[in-house]
Image 1 (cartoon, rainbow, N blue to C red):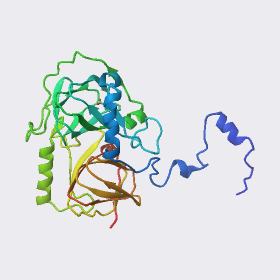
Image 2 (image 1 turned 45 degrees about the vertical axis):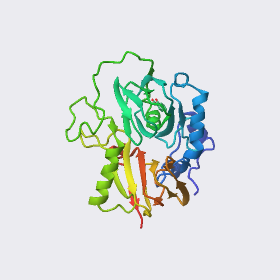
Image 3 (image 1 turned 120 degrees about the vertical axis):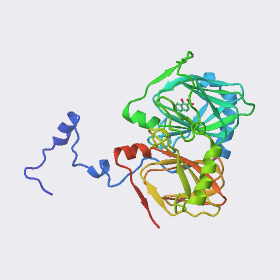
Length: 335
Ligand code: 1HN
């Protein structure tokens, strides 16, 4: 369209020289009609990544590495950008007798134990035992280290909100505190606290798998199956009934043998870890077959549908709780 008067030839250069941008140029690119996540769906197969993690046992000690961790980097990202924009999924290995030294950071972390017994993670000096399938919380800015008192390698999934902290420039990190502040014993298990709301300061940090698995069986008996998610429960903070963690929504779902889920999408890019079973998830038209201990990521607003070829249990985490707090979370189902 002709302008009267026409835009002076140097106008855009003069605007750029002032470190300003005209919003009317390519607006759709900056304010898209719906989410256009700059990362891809992806799957990490345990049979490919586990040998590399075990090899890391020969490559570095936890003292040298601080944490012997492989970050599952989204294939569309470079450097330490994470698994989604807001979250990191990592795999950590600790060998019998080893100690990963105490540190603290503003990132919240979750652990989902995949293999091994006898691992202890400390949170502000309190010991939290780790057993396969357990979901364990390391709250923001708490001192934490890991030790291994068992006799076989321990592997767990770490989930962290690193991307979220990076986006807001709220990352702090401190290492090397060995004298731990005397916060007294930590209430470590939802089991121990069963039925009682915890008092201020006491935190539930461990959600044992046997109890969670039992809860799924109860759900199967007393509720209707969700057409997309099977029988699904969310881990909650018994103190207030809200999300177990302030930045990450965590869930466990049971899919019956032969379950064929209806397509679903939501704005929280989600990382799934297979605890039991085998199946396949279609993500944006692409098939991702999975087995025990595989990890896969569904980007924001990508349509996905699960299929289970045997009875399966999947753990998931995402930044949904943050999006809910901000009033921007959306979901859609199609049938
Ligand atoms: C971290 O501190 C741990 O404490 C695990 O075990 C994974 C990934 C990125 C940044 C810090 C841990 C991590 C991490």
